[in-house]
Length: 288
Ligand code: HPA
Image (tube, rainbow, N blue to C red; front, side, top):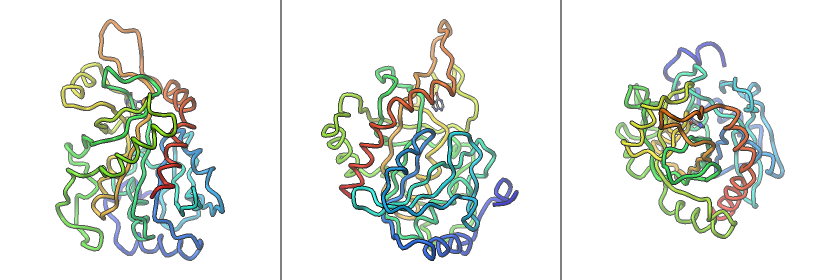
């Protein structure tokens, strides 16, 4: 990656192809499942067996990670006997990457033959019935950067990836959602599994009280700074998507409250629940 990752607004088919071909030449694994791990949730990649690990810096044309707590490695391996590729560390819009760079890996996954994308993230709880530590199965999203013209599909459409005007009313696979709810029950996560709408804001600021109230009115249950661009690109190229948000904090909606959203609380809750989320994802992969 060079400075162009921060300024350039599109990549050619050949760019993605070059990255995918390099990976195909450097691993024997042919994953059908890709997993993007959210902040502090990269431990999942350590569970993979028969691993091939590629630091992002070694992969031709691949962006690099800048956030602390994000390892920046692409890990191929087997989870519950299924071949997977796992992103340990994702790219955030707030880091300064353009939206095409944020989603670069997803098109590479498509060219590797991936059919299902699993995404995880940390999110603030907007729904007043959610508790810190709940896991929210993402049923739908609100693409707030998209409202503001930051959609990863803006620009020339390459039909080799998908159609010009893709449908998003079925972004999160219903069958996988049903499997996830059943798996959560079986894995002892049923008491803290929620489902709802994830809203992405660009960040890096946490939300004002007025913004949180506005998002609640819009019908969002959780708010975060990631995931949606990757999901849009995955759906464009026909992948099935399953997503989980870990509710790491409750957003502040009351001017009398002394509570303040902070990254420390996000990391602490993530650590508390990471194992549960890993178990849930692992058992989902086993059924794909
Ligand atoms: N807001 C935005 N992003 C987040 C939050 C939040 O409260 N918690 C974790 N990621």
